[in-house]
Image (tube, rainbow, N blue to C red; front, top):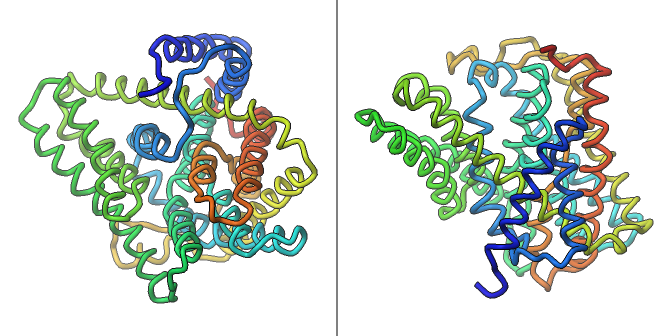
Length: 410
């Protein structure tokens, strides 16, 4: 590949290791340290030749992050709030996207298409950023599940909205029935791909007692499920999420050998560390190139609109959930006792402020075709929102969690 050299890439990995050491000593969020390191590397004569693209984020870096996060998530913790999480990830995302879209169109005269594309790509909280932030903090388990699971699930809704708007940009006809069908397939196809691939890999792993084979098969489960779902236009994130839940809740308990469990977990922790490091350093390098562009009044207005969108996505739905009797819905028909449990106001505050944005939104913005109105402005505003998310929300998150009493002791 033109411009690629292993030497600067090695320097990037060395920088990530040094940042991890320094961040822990200074009690600085690791993701913030990585972005700062990326900015410094961008100012130095070092170029790894790795552009921050949609294909890099989606096909290479996102699957291990989603898989590892889901593998560590217990189903018994997830199912208690699954209906509420689905509500946030579907209706909440739509409300947030609509508010941002209306604001850009009404106050700044953007076209409906350009405003809608930015509203959708920025409304979804980024699993890369959220998983990175909560992994390094000893957060109360239920809150961690709420925030992380929402960031993983809302990708499906955002993917459908984004693809539909791109179809409109290309002149294709869009119907309500087509939208419903696309949404259903995006979700169900992703879950099905995860179940099929992870189930097949666990069947192959059962007779093996070799931890190298077990690691390889879980790698196939993570990437294979993602790529299979994306190939059939379903949600790769939901596929890797499902595969991770299957491996973590069934494979590690019943299929993978006792001697291999520690190796599998350690491998995926390292894979997630590597992917996170590369993502945030690349974000920092890109932010350095856009620093002058994002320091504008429009960028500040976009940040306020995104925060307002997050308000309407969280607080009204939290109030609605408080009126729903606990353990209803699917619990009554015996589907794994899935239900909805009430959450406190302090949970809602963290859900609001913890709705971080990162590489996913940037990758979608950079992948927009040149024919999209306001493409250049969309990219600049996406970088502005991500910069605010990393440096303001990311740095203040430990203080907020400590103030609200969510950090576990020990």
